[in-house]
Length: 254
View 1 (cartoon, rainbow, N blue to C red):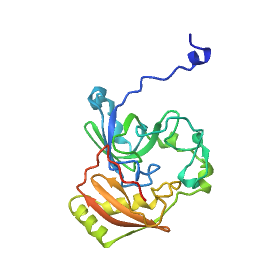
View 2 (cartoon, rainbow, N blue to C red; view 1 turned 90 degrees about the vertical axis):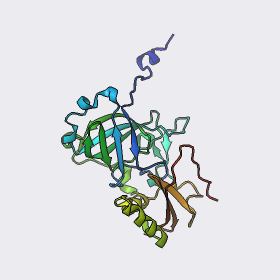
View 3 (cartoon, rainbow, N blue to C red; view 1 turned 30 degrees about the vertical axis):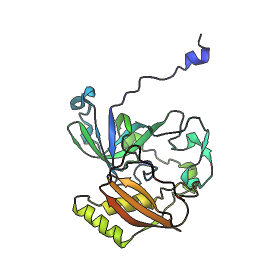
View 4 (spheres, helix red, strand yellow; view 1 turned 180 degrees about the vertical axis):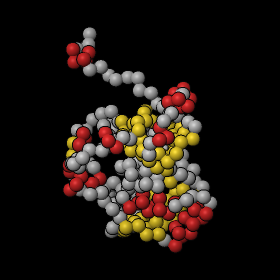
């Protein structure tokens, strides 16, 4: 027989996936930690036909921004940790509910995206912080009158700015990016720079933080390689045509 506590607070079931996001970010590494940090980050979301997009999306095109509720499907944590290590704190801890960490009891994401345009059942979005393949649970229009709070306080984040890097490009990287942009990859160089500016590395991973380590991440089907020395990220090269596979694993840095 269920205890009174369990009966009063049953497990929530019945979440529906309305669509799966197609994002320029192919893996967790390199995906921005917050929305709007990389304005050029593009994605699209096609609403499944069973949710009658011709009717359910009616009126949404009038809004400039939308909230996406998503599911952090790549989470690997098996246990609950009441405190986590946000990148801003450089090894320090804060309560999980005072953070935007994906490692939560219910791995639900909340992201603000710019709605660039709509075409039939598909939303074209920018400024997102979600990896390719993310299941989307819901869409809500952004309402300035209700979603923007006057005199809001940003807590501990005001004392701990996002880490920022200076981004430079090698001669080879400039050549690689020029080819991509000529082939239709508009502003690809800026997308790379904006992504790296916020330092995708994990400050607690000593191998990643080693000066000069060759690291990489996928943007669409482009494998961007870079190395960080001090406060500067140097884009080394961009390997194009490599398809990111779900089971793809890089060799761990040595």
